[in-house]
Image 1 (cartoon, rainbow, N blue to C red):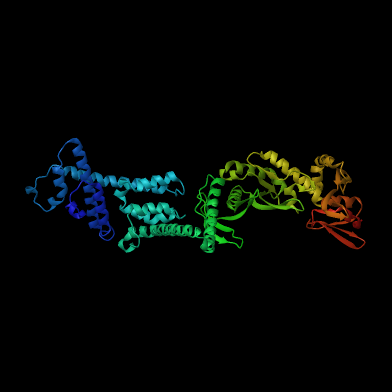
Image 2 (cartoon, one colour):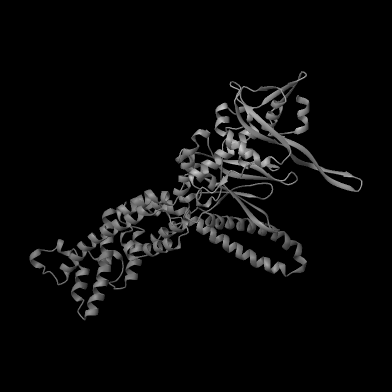
Length: 563
């Protein structure tokens, strides 16, 4: 076997020339189509590299290279010559040892590569990881094993799964490492062809990007010329409008990438893919996270104003997806709740990530799980505040908000669950629930709850004693025992403005919470009937029936028509 004849070059110690000749031969000799010829080609390639290295070492030591050179020319001739007529040349034993060592070395190198490949999950925009792969794939170590059967089979089977986020940078490194060329699929066979098909879209995308950049550069040059020509001003404007829109969209996409990286620094995301554009020019994107690739994250980028300055605004649901996912892991229910705040003239819709408890009796266990979840899961660190509420009441927003703007009965049920203790959280939630029931669902309070809450709520009522209103006493309907004493306040709500000549002033309505309306009417002997489902109560007066429970508060003076 004449290795130089197989490679198609003259004997040389230039490794670059050897590799170039080998790469040219691999395009016409394929491992799947001509396995024996490819094996000879690969062995000749390794022998030539070994010869070049041997020459370098011998020359450094001042020795002669003649014997090895002759051996490298005539490897395999002993198979056809008579054994008694051939004298083994010096260096042939070294070459044989070199082949055995090379085969073992390549097996080890292939195993090392497969271990790296197994641990590979996609470097995304990790520059350090990208530099490592770039250096490794261009190294002699990988070039020696790139046609190794196991390496080819593994890459052909798995590269699309490993790079399914569209990591074209990684695919292009493999494309270059194998020396593929565009539109030459039929030149490859077997696993090599399958690998080519997986890598080709990345090559095609890069080619299109280059063409696009070339076209854009050319267009910019033409644009600069037209800008300088006054007579073509209208044409310049027509050209600039679509360019500006494109750049604005591109800037919005780049802003989204930067936003997600800053908001979730521990998570890598795929490139945003444009999904739709609404009539106002706002663009919705889809992207995926490395931590939870099964979720499709939706992010909307729109142009708004922050402190009077034009800026991009992002609305995305990754935090909501994280919240609901971990809530389910801890046996909790997580959702998004809307709350209307602000003033009557300037209402503000606020959305809270909320944890919902179903039964006040299970609140202690609920709080322990909620606090545990936020302290154990690092991915939830971006959530500074979480609402804690229940849907098992008539007015959950009232409980969440802590009452109404004109009549707050407790703090908002918004907490930082990373810092609050479970026992303290449970105490505050129970106190808020108690106040809510007295103020907004008093007809649903049981005798047992009156005994449990009576003393605490009587003490709480003292804070309203100097307001408009009056005291009310609750008695056990069966024994006549007084269960508690509470204050029924009324409050003012601004309903607009009036104008009387030159005098302008606000208009107010006197209000009372629907729960306190129940106590008030009960004291005056009104004909009350509680709905069977607890959704409210009704009052019958002179044949007229008035329903309560649809709204959390009523106008105080309207109660005169009920007794």
